[in-house]
Amino acid sequence: MNNQDKCSNLSVCHLGFALAMVHGLFFFLVAYVSTFHASLMPLVKSLELVFAGFGPGLVGGAIGFVWGFVTGYVAGGLIGFFYNLGNRYCCCNKGACQMKETRKK
Image 1 (cartoon, one colour):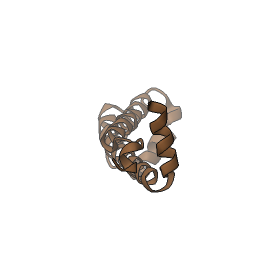
Image 2 (cartoon, rainbow, N blue to C red):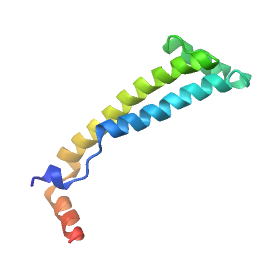
Image 3 (tube, rainbow, N blue to C red):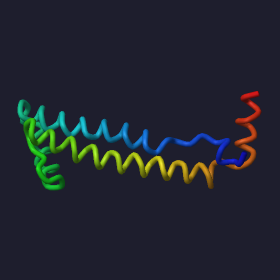
């Protein structure tokens, strides 16, 4: 068993999906709630500039959910990938992994 197997890694797909859901729901809720509260309109207007189709209401919120899901999945995947990469090359030296292994026994 090599050092990588002994150290904790994140599941890139699971982290990507979790952040995708949170980001997508945030976009949807901001779009939906902005129809009732005008205080969120500046945020919606700024997000409209970046995400095509996003806007106040249910339809804009559904489009925002898709945008949020895609961007959240990419961001979560990249975070998980770079975490695992750093875990493999930087933080998981032999002493740290051996300490984790001896604690389990």
